Length: 139
Image (tube, rainbow, N blue to C red; front, side):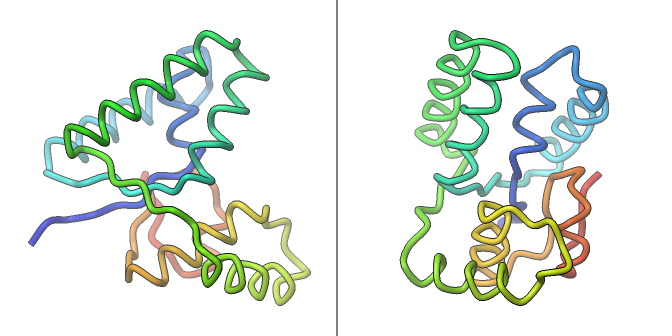
């Protein structure tokens, strides 16, 4: 059975920005996950958020290169992109409203909904919000 792990914006950004404080740990974990045969699962929302963050914090060219690379990874079967649908959005909004004591982004909430929908338990992220929701954060 193919092992799947959800990939959050934290991981995409940390991998792309060599000056990021989390770059080395993200690189090490990325290699380990690939060596262990994991398929990376993400959403169109996470990719959009990642492109925006890279554009704002690094530059437009890096954001474009990231997008093109992810599209190649999808075609080669290393990454699966789940399109957030109306059910995911509704579930995400329920989570967002329920956890008013947390600073969850709506993108995080859609990620939680997708992970629940696909029965994914592991997430490649340094964002502790995922552990609050009961997911296993890697690293």
